[in-house]
Amino acid sequence: MAGMVPSFITGANARISVGGKTFAYAADVSYQVIIDTVPIETMGRYEAVSNEPVNYSVSGELSIVRYTKLAKSIANQVTPPAGSTGTGNGLGNVTLSTGQLASDHINPVNMLASQTWDLNVYQKTVNSGSDTAEVGFINISDCRFNRMSGGLNKRGILVDRLAFVGILMQDDSFAAGHSGDIDLSSG
Image (cartoon, rainbow, N blue to C red):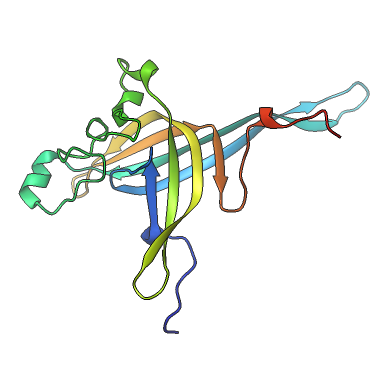
């Protein structure tokens, strides 16, 4: 079927943006929204009357394929991501759109002064001919990195895994809003 454009979202047609910039070479991103609930129980009943929400939280992970300044100078084929200094793509070499280093979130010296960032995932689409555009379909607002780990094996490459927490998640099917923004007085 010539001329058909796939509409499924895949890693091949997605771009991950952290703090307004394409973030390093993110190999994957995952997220979860959790609504904690508590059962409301009454006298004379064994079962709960209802389960009421008490917390909304967003968390996730993304993986970064790492390279160093040495790898860049030897291969000269690695294109530094936007915001990086060209000396590798570790967190200490990537500046977010806030002007801060991405490593400020995991560096005890800078933790309290670090600012939140938004995570966005865009789908690349083909308009007509070879023109491409990007459509945002996932947004997680006010994120902070809260865990970093890495993995390297004998035949593999170094991959940093970065965990984050956020305030609200929305996608192309709904927009989450702050619960304090609703007016409960109007019926």
